[in-house]
Image 1 (cartoon, each protein chain N blue to C red):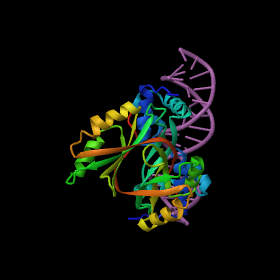
Image 2 (image 1 turned 120 degrees about the vertical axis):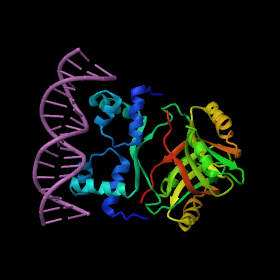
Image 3 (image 1 turned 30 degrees about the vertical axis):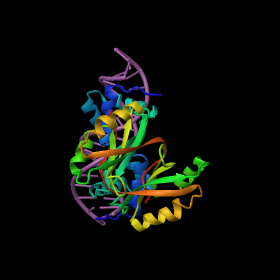
Image 4 (image 1 turned 90 degrees about the horizontal axis):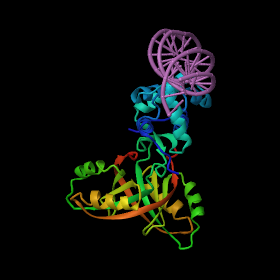
Length: 151
Length: 151
DNA sequence: AATGAAAGGCTGGAACT
DNA sequence: AGTTCCAGCCTTTCATT
């Protein structure tokens, strides 16, 4: 299950985390092997599933999504989690959902255009899911850290 | 402040979100303009700051970081936030930190190898920050949704 | 796993519409 | 904003070590 990464793989990953569009030749010159070798290793790491996908970090505020919030969701005792997740997936403002220990059944992160839009999403979308009994909202005023794990 | 994205820009962004390493020529053939135009637009979007960086989504479990947790951090009234953030930045297990409304002063997301490691991070690192009075931890047992916002 | 070589393909700048 | 052009560079494959 735990794919083994050697120190070369780790160096490659660090360069890709910093800039997923970096050229293979540039990684090669940083790492000190040929680009053919880098190419093969990236394929192997990708196939191993350690890299789920190459993507981007967006500035949500600049896209007009100025409000970020975490919502603790309380659920009925005998809820069908899978079905609830399917309903949450249909809510486009939801970007993360976690099953958590502690008082909440689910913990959700979402982005909305503003506070009015947040109210609408809570009242018209999340609270409409029938197993949801109550929610608790924390608005993120600022996100001073957002990065990948180091390893 | 809010950079204007037209429908072509949005299509480009969607392709890059799905695969940040997609070739410019491939975006061009999906979108229906020349690759020179795509190239110019990507530069413009990047310069506009909407794309903060190209990066990757990792499978933290496969990297040996099996435990994901959210920590609500209670702080002294007169805390110097900036300094606390600097201390959190030095904790490599921390991947996100938010200033939030509600009962917590800060809300932190972190990855640890296992529950013992989580205990160590909480007791030996986070609770060692002098303004931290108390913490409340939610362990994420599973993360069934993790995606970018749609726009 | 890494290398070298080779072919084809892509990128990114320039000039122009 | 978009297009064409194109030289130079990069990617990717494969036989070999």
